[in-house]
Image (tube, rainbow, N blue to C red; front, side, top):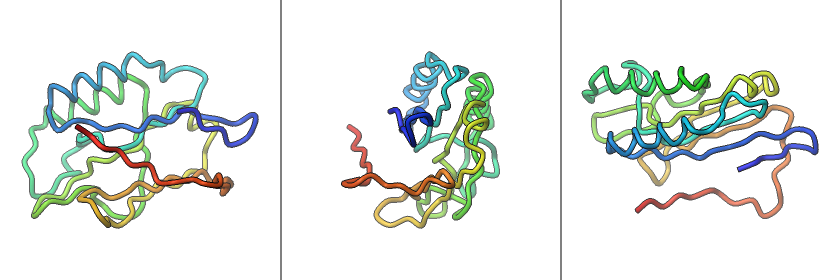
Length: 154
């Protein structure tokens, strides 16, 4: 989706859902790899990637190191960067397992054009996932009739 902040400032936003199924998730990495993140357009990929970036993003669950590596390899290969987030440390909780499955990834053009961005993991309300709050500093305009984005999966 193209997001225009003004006539001259815009970026491309992709809401991501990564399947818990490793094979299906690899297909997502393949599809996303076909996009041109290195273009002159700022890109943002945000959502539930169902993937961990490192072992510190997991407490109480067991994940093989190879799974972290595949996600990190995808991010590095595509020239993307994982944005640091404020707020809750973990974005997904189930019983004793706490993980960071929700991420915001951006390309180099994003950092060149938008240096002041806040990303926050908000408290969970009606889900086992924390919502991501994403704000470009200096841009507080919310279009009239704006509604929360909801995603239903099959």
